[in-house]
Length: 99
Image (cartoon, rainbow, N blue to C red):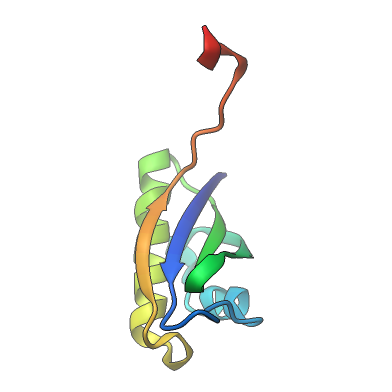
């Protein structure tokens, strides 16, 4: 399972919707491998989605997350005006970074 962060830009400064995780989940098909969605509102209409996806490789999970969110933004009326900014795994710093 992979955690992919997808950054969205909303149409205004109140982009985070209480039903955003449900909307994304409703747009997912079995091939997307979606297991769970977490929503993290940010400043100025930004929102970060944490998509937990089953995939055989990281690159596959990133492509699946991008496709799913692009599809949701394009097809779901409640997401009109949203844009996908990024869809990628986040590097987590480890103790080796300072060496």
